[in-house]
Amino acid sequence: MKAAVLQMNTAFASPKDNLAALPWLVAEAMAAGPDVLLLPELWQVGFYPRPIRDYADPEGRETRETLAALARRHRVNIVGGTAARLAEDGLVYNTSYVLDRSGKVIASYDKAHLFSPSGEDKDFAAGGSACVFELEGLRCALAVCYDIRFGAFIERLAREGADILFLPAAWPLARLTHWQTLLRARAIEQQFFVVAANGAGGQTEQPLAGHSAIIDPWGTILAEAGEAQEIISAELDMALLRQARESLPVRRDRRGELYNEAEDVPHFCKWGCTF
Image (tube, rainbow, N blue to C red; front, side, top):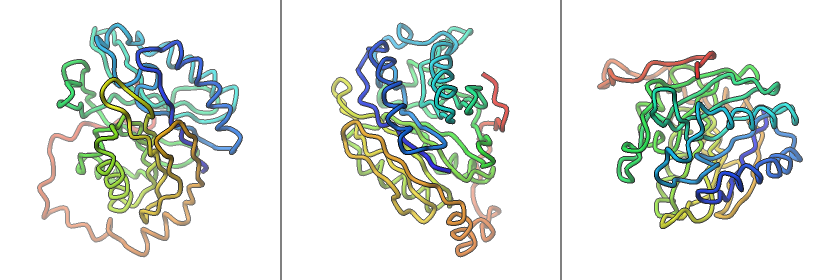
């Protein structure tokens, strides 16, 4: 599978501009012949204008329609970053959609861990499930930005069989070292590919770090962007994944009975997520 990451320079609080820019970026990314495209977190509005409710997409309809049209036009799978979704219950969720080459939504995920230092937990509702899904015959998982700091959560995704972790984010430049370290650490410890899309450019007082990356199960960086808008791509070689797991059988050697396993891990939505 070949993955491409769209590191967008999102226009803050300007969905019209971001929606207009996306088709051009997708067309540019398709020159590399990817099987799947990954977008960053809250690519339509940036991270994030307040009150977020004023920018939220009712039930994600416009987001899904936009991504579906692009998936059909280019015959490509899309992991659509995230959108601020206004749900029927009146709450706003930070929601990711996965679409296949026909434009069908095959999975969705509401961000589970909300970044309380910025007040995200006051503006969004937390998701209550995690998501593992199948894409092109491979098991994949979704996490969003702050989720990557929670090792037990990421480990659970791996234990559910994920071979690829897709991670849309809006990670600030001030914590770039954390971003780069955590991405490589999760790839190495869970022995899967990490495909991470960050935003780029200024977002009010917190410029985003960029440095989207594609990392293999050995922790090797297959592709990494700079700080500006950029598209990166890389081949995800499943033979390399098998080699890593056979050479270092950490999943087999795991001693779960010795660990303080979390009892409150959200339930999982596999290959048929509802939205």
